[in-house]
Figure 1 (cartoon, rainbow, N blue to C red):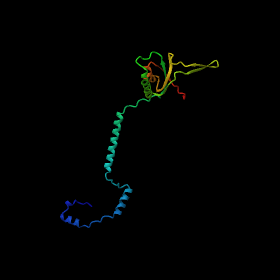
Figure 2: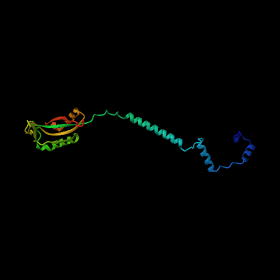
Figure 3: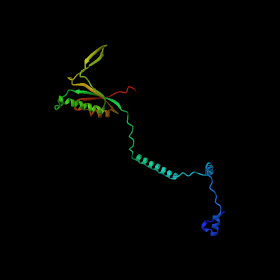
Figure 4: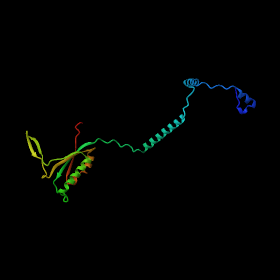
Length: 198
């Protein structure tokens, strides 16, 4: 049945329309059952307040996160290539009995010792000063031969050692060249410590 809008009705039709009995509103439980049945059949979807706004906000948040990630990724420096593992290197510190620098005295010794310690804290994983004298033994014709290790009166003697970590001989040498031992007339021999697990 077609119905005209109320402004197109004549006054008499409008009075007749107003006189028609009004339907009563259905009970709430009946309305809930009908809505549930329609939803179960997929004919009705419950409207959640703010649902569209929530989806728009979520989409905007995801887009912002993607753009931020892209911007950070574009600004990030490329990862450096993997470095070879560090090996251990022994720095043998030989004392050279050449002339002692003329401007140094016994009073300078605590400062020099602290210079060595400071260098070791930054660069070494171990190290010790050796006693001046020792004993060298060997087996000669089935007999133990014993000799005194050269001491400070000899031209060159081993006075101590440091253990450092480096990737290769070149890096070990670069580290060794900063050791104060060279500054005070010493000689450093660099030897790699062999990996016995290989």
